[in-house]
Image (tube, rainbow, N blue to C red; front, top):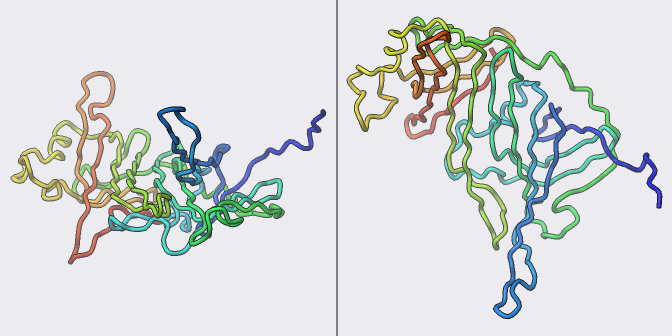
Length: 312
């Protein structure tokens, strides 16, 4: 038996989701997540295995392009309440479109873990995106359109634009007093999201994911900050700096705004305080990596956004 080279399928692809097109930095894979349960007996041990659950999982790193349309698609939970359906009432399919001219449509996708961000000149802005697909809504488990549909479609996308990759210097503003207005950092600002969720099952099968909570921190190494200034920023002498006090009652609780100027994205971490920092004594910079911790606020009974990502 022989195998002609032309019969071997390979090559890159783009991802279409939420009305947006995404190019990736690296090759990526979508993998089936099949959960099997053992059927056991005392006499014979495990005699077979039964299907308990199935979904697709996709993890990919965007190429670094960041445009306005990407923001609500990749970071959808800034103001979401616990208990929010992550898949929603209507399906949003994930389409893999190959350069070779085929599409594979995976039904009912969602961003299960919001990608981290980096604002600086040394890395591209967007970290890894994790997605799940739980199958077409209100459709038989083994129906032809439930999980994946393969079709031929010529590749004709022309949306890629290197100018949308924003590797540049950013500054931070935390409050309205020096030295925290327009302060510089050693390399950049690393924004980390934590998205927790629980499966919602019907008949033992995952039908949805329910948002439990989100959290966000920003880490950076600020430069040109003195010992006295970082000690003051910790608010250690604040009247509310006592065990049990909420950090949003401290005088150092302010929005942290990361900006790169006109035409660049900007990020705001709402009502944050310094949670960790360090004083280094040696040849390196005196102030070590510093982390700002966000807090969620409620205004007249409504949950405020934890962060905002927009354009300056």
